[in-house]
Amino acid sequence: MKDLKAHRQSEQIAWEERQAAELKKLKGARLHLSMNVVAYIGISIVEFYLAVVGRSQTLRADALNNLSGIISTALLLMGNHIASDIDDDDLIGQPLSAELQQDDQRLQLTRFRYETVFTLITGIVMVAIAGSVMFSGVKSLLHTGTQTIPQPITLVGAGIAALIMLIVWWSNRRAGRKLQNASLTAAAQDSLSDAVTSVGTLVAIAGALLFQFEWLDGAASIVVGIFILTAGVKIFRESSLNLADYFDPKAEEQFRQAVLAFPAVQGVQELNAHYNGNVVTLDLIIEVDPHMEVQDSYRLGEEIEATMRRQFGIVDTDVMAVPKG
Image 1 (cartoon, rainbow, N blue to C red):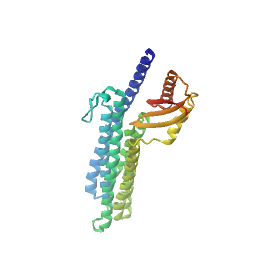
Image 2 (cartoon, helix red, strand yellow):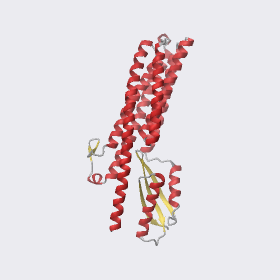
Image 3 (tube, rainbow, N blue to C red):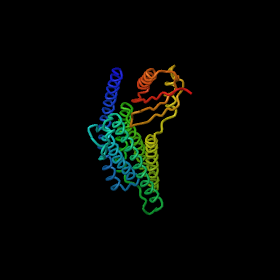
Image 4 (cartoon, rainbow, N blue to C red):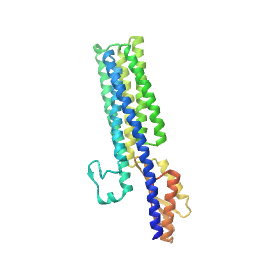
């Protein structure tokens, strides 16, 4: 009994250390996302103003794209805040059950999933913005009387946006890899799309000015919309799969082989990995010798959990041992 109590204490300490590490990552991600908002606001204001003054459909589309960046980053910040709010006694206004209040680990894992929820909403917003941008581009092409050649001043806005977005993308990508944070990874994908569209906007405006093609501005805005749509669908797909408890089969096979490497494990009946934000948990049902003592099967489960944590960074592994039939 004393050994069991000591083990549970050590597990609690390990969980608190992992929780603290994840919260530190969330705080770092929040700082980068806040900087993104500032950059997006500045770019959007400059581009909208120059798009009106310079009469550029493509620059307006890029400004709308960066406006979507403000919305999506704000959503990511909301998810980040909920995931890291360990002092809250409810979940976004909803009271907690007595069981959930007593299970600190399960509660925090639930909070971590909210980061994925808001990342999913970000993808939806990007798809909606893409639809608006492409509709405006098609409308411009169909109504030739409204087509105009942009003014040279619009090149300035596109150039500034392209430079800033490349810096934002590099910063998000670097921080996302360092912190292994889903919201920063999504922000990096979003900012890369924004950087590409800003560069495309710059090229399109330059081409329209150089060759005097009135239709090029509207056509380029459609291409910008396609880039936004592609990035939004990718973010939506990855987030929805995580929320639907989908896990990479190749990674699960690696987990299975690691478990089967234990001599006492005679088979793996079930193996299910789950994402909780950036944290991975694992449910296992293993087959063991029918004559194995309970104490031995318990120790085997603890050894497996320690190995999965050390080898793959899995924060919690629930192991159930059943006799091999």
